Image 1 (cartoon, one colour):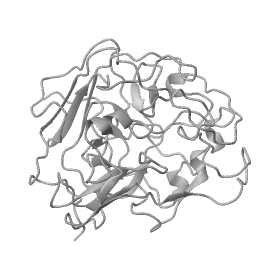
Image 2: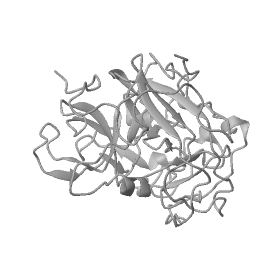
Image 3: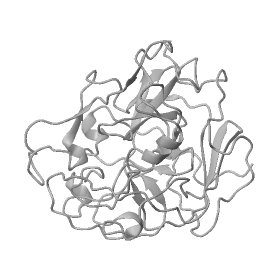
Length: 349
């Protein structure tokens, strides 16, 4: 089997995160993270922003057909889960380019591998400006925006993509387009959830896989994480806005305009600092560590409980998925059937 150039080794064995300040990027940079300075991704200059307050998002209605056919395959071989995708969504999208986003959606040629038998790592790893994972339709969950106060990534103040302070042209799926043409989700993928039959009255269907190999769900889980017979509930994040004003940088109140406006308060919600928990799910009845997208910040998790593979490899715009034909389903359901082996990281013994 051909091994992807992005296979594992994203950040391994690095001295880690024990405080929420480091998790939010307020501490020293880590090897493998995004370097400091004024340059943006691929060396592009960062935009200069001085906004300090959150604003309504004003989402672009998803009324347009995506430019092309969705192509995705997810399969397992040699203890790795491989995804091959052209990153074209299989649902309606907003109009791109638009006032807040000048880019057009273009097909990519991504092939990545993540662990099929993930394990809990000794320390958590921040997502930073890397994709968190991918949806079953092959579109990335990529929560971080490369937008910083005064255009300086070393300022310690990163704009929150869902905070509205900086208009990013997000559509109804809380998604927009990178300069490469890659369509990606910054928040709840509204039409994908509807397509998968997500409902407040039953446990969330699996919606994707994280870069560390653990499954991703959205919003709804069992009220007792160890009991599949317990009622379902909308799960709450344990992150909250900090009280008072920002002590430096942009000033103003902690209102959600910046990632650093939030702090983790253990036990204040249903989920841990990675927006996940150990739980039984319909797909993993023996239990697994699982991530949940939430209504409240961070919506998409901002840290990994396991060891992530790097998903920051560019595909070839204008072509479909590359790589060998993969065994397993097309990507419209998990490749681990109910009753099958759960990823390592099931309930702690």
